[in-house]
Amino acid sequence: MIYAVEHAGPEDRERLIELYRLDDPTEDELGEIVRILERVGARDYTRDTALRYRDQALAELDAAGVVEPAARARLQEIIVGVISA
Image 1 (cartoon, one colour):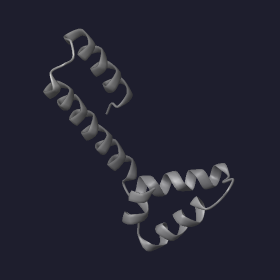
Image 2 (tube, one colour; image 1 turned 90 degrees about the vertical axis):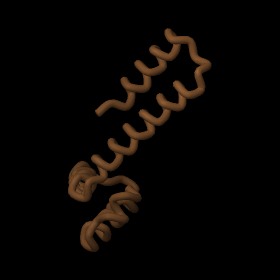
Image 3 (cartoon, rainbow, N blue to C red; image 1 turned 180 degrees about the horizontal axis):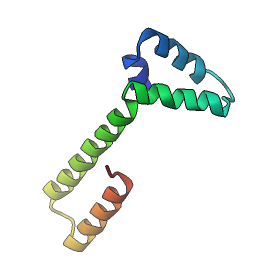
């Protein structure tokens, strides 16, 4: 949401803030939120950021050198399973 508000045009920004303030948005309003998020690239930004953090976490795990290979492999499997492209 923060990325979207910061990167949206004025009209989308105003509408997104208006929709975000709703206590119980309808399905149509939720769909509108998703369309705005897509339009400003928030999904791509979020995915790319998650992948970067995933890769950084795996690199830090390797740098620590304290995890046994089987445990390291399992941790990587979990991390990659949760955060994949």
